[in-house]
Length: 55
Image 1 (cartoon, rainbow, N blue to C red):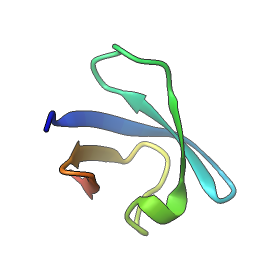
Image 2: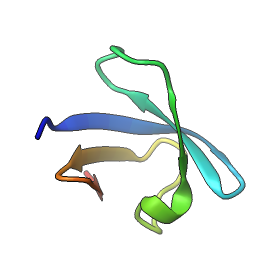
Image 3: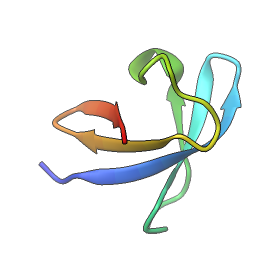
Image 4: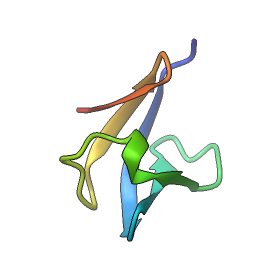
């Protein structure tokens, strides 16, 4: 599995906009239930093996 790195660009209610740090893709709109509870705008995340982890 490929490791991807994101930053939480915006929190919009029960969803968050994630932006790839390498800029290869469009921002990702994802349910906050799939992310760690402690996230806030500007939080850096690592996605690996179907899980998000705060860096």
